[in-house]
Image (cartoon, rainbow, N blue to C red; front, side):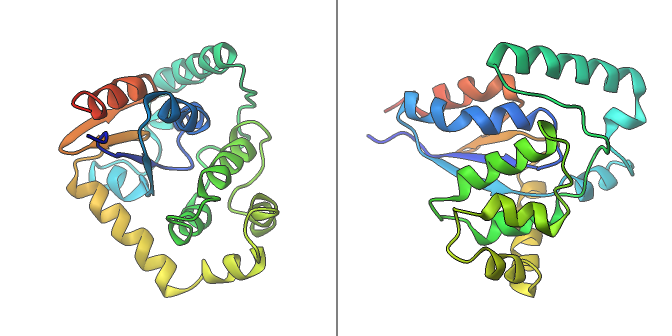
Amino acid sequence: MKPTPLEFWFEFASTYTYPAALRIADVAQRYGCSVIWRPFLLGPIFRGQGWNDSPFNIYPAKGRYMWRDLERICTKLGLPLRTPSQFPRSSLLAARIACLAAGEPFLPEFVRRVYKRNFAEDQDIADANVMLACLHGLASNPEAVLAAAQTEDAKSRLRQNTTRAVELGLFGSPSFVVGDELFWGNDRLETAFEWATADS
């Protein structure tokens, strides 16, 4: 029996999703499990909770802890980290591109590149030129992909993903969905894969 596919729900502005996004492919290979990549936006979910900003900005003590914790995680994993000069950054454009690339072989590498630009290189992922650089060498026509990200189709796909995230009860990123089970947080990645492969 094949393992249940794991849905990886990610928001490009999310700090803890940075290490999860960079390691999930290797972990999936180790468990012999497939991953379905699901970009969504946390902004509408936060607004539904009465927040107009990241909780890491609303609650400074929580924010200070998060950045130090992320430093420890990245050091352990050997990942570069540069605290973004703007946080959170708009992830709208990157998420639309990721929605358009659903099922494309290059999607995982595109996602990794976007996270590196944001959290390792302090680049603005809302900038079209940054997105073109992320697509370079992956998509056959990066300019066409960027143009398509402005279409109603791309906008609709992202809205549908975000609506689905709300329906699933997602409240943060990274989130991993296996069947009816929800796992939240980079530190729950292996647990989610263990659940997905328990009966295989």
